[in-house]
Image (tube, rainbow, N blue to C red; front, top):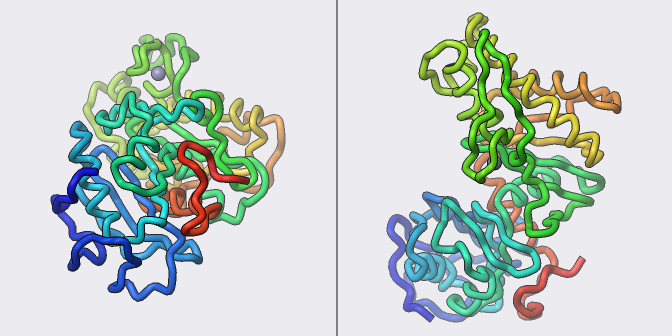
Length: 343
Ligand SMILES: [Zn+2]
């Protein structure tokens, strides 16, 4: 096990004493359910989780994204003040194969190719759960909205298009851990916009014509650039659309048209009762309402209220989703590694 080192930018809770097997005296908490961490390409967010599921005091350190030993040391420093029988539940920007436990992450590349939960259990000396960040987002949003039953499809419209599928309050990982990844697949042909064809564009996944290339925040910017030749950012495009500017309206209409068809298919196919949206584009409630209206015009089912809605939980969703996954565990009675929580 690596020796704990000081995290780069934050002091972990209770780190005033030597690390040891104890519940942090400083927190004064009567008991903890476990520990949660949200691993992004830039930062690790961490918090203890109370028996009631509430997050304790959160801390944040830089992610040693390309350095496995440094990555383990950072997590060790965060976890060390807490009793070893408390499990650590991770939300990570990457895919974890449910059968093999092997991770694939472009943003936290030191985890790629590793059986992540098992490797971290060895390094940290405690039970570790791992889930995709979009899955954790969808789980937290489903719970936060009281959608404990039925299908919730959480989508991310940020630098890319991602998503997570939740059924009856539990993540559906699917074969290979990719359930919910609706942004990839060669579905877009050339699109006639402004008298010229746009795409189909090559995608980072290796295919051509993925929704990811035009449906994300970067996609909206590509559409705007194709139509008007300007290098406007997505917040500026949305702001100008809201102000009634014709060129921004053309870009937003084209984006909404491209996105609403595949999203309607997704809702039809899954029977989703709710589609919470996270990522940069979800910061504009009017934009998401516009997309919702376009999707609902294309659904087989008629819905009275909004279906595609902005996320409520903001940046805490990953941590909250990871915290929810600890529900199945009681301290000191942890199941063997690499098993999913019991239902
Ligand atoms: Zn792709």
